[in-house]
Image 1 (cartoon, rainbow, N blue to C red):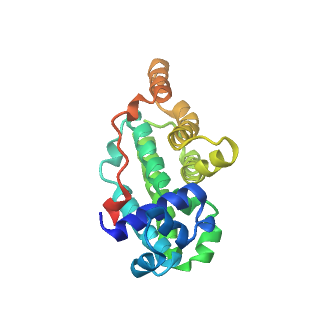
Image 2 (cartoon, one colour):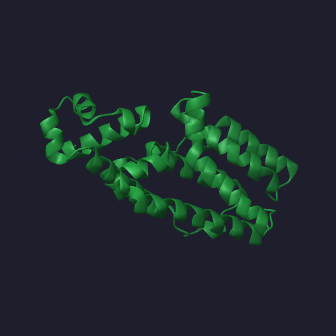
Image 3 (cartoon, helix red, strand yellow):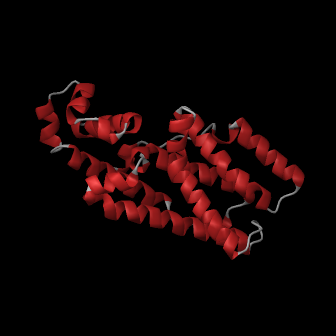
Length: 221
């Protein structure tokens, strides 16, 4: 792995674990056992690191937030797709800790951050409208709009809530976020009681993601 890639991965890990505000460029260099000068050769301070990580995150979400086949999802597929969204955001979760402060500190990431949030809402709108039109989701337009707001809020903010209140590990944070969303969505799915129970059992067992593999951030570098 090239040095620049190692630096980005180390920075992302430290930012996620400790928050961008508490991590210095020297901390990242020490983590990698390289000199601060070597790090500076590749990235001229934290500004360029944060900007590069946001570019990776934006490319990641651009690949994910496409409408291809979204209008053919079945009820049992919704849970997996929502987990995919949670997992993708979680990879770059430091961007969603105090995001207003972060974009004020690093104004170069503002456009990309807004684009990601806008694309996420557009994707969720399309998903819920499609499900409603096919009578898979029992919700009127007003309900769908509220569901979009709720799901977007959970996807982007629930991990921060867990870190502050429950201290759950990374994996449990993602399951917790998915559980939040499914509590709101499951009663609205046009399924029999037995089918809903089966979906609940699948959610609680975590088996539905046993073969799921989070993509490396470097896939989007």
